[in-house]
Length: 172
Image (cartoon, rainbow, N blue to C red; front, side, top):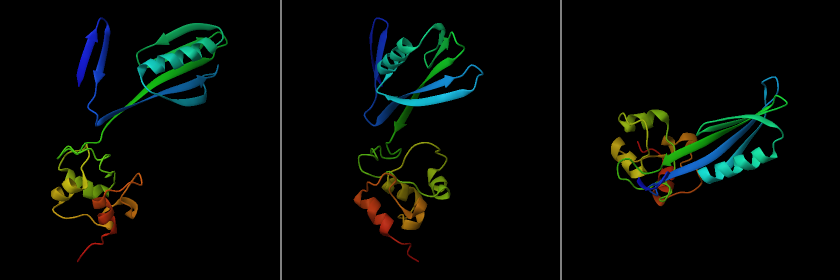
């Protein structure tokens, strides 16, 4: 990650293979403490998070107290209600841990059975493997039976290699 600093502002640039998805969870809490309406708001980043919270704040009637951190904001209202905002951030890296190819770009977003994955993972709990690197670790090519639900692609997109493996039955 590279950063650029100007005064009290800092921005980080991620490798293109690393995706950051932002969200904002809005929760209304009634006078008795029971959670009521909840909304999930998709946002593009921290600036939009602050803009959305500010729009909601201006629409609220009679705020008596505001409590907040970097990841939360709570608006206590005169009638005893509470409006909470929680920032959500999901970071994903879709590079193969062995060869560094971005599996999204080559259309190899798949899921194999857990026991097969654990056998190939060799202690690596996190990360992704392209089909070729998984096969190298297993010492064999994948077949239809290796994929969860007998369907190779999780997002409907297939590389030629993934389609071929989905159509292959195990040879005896």
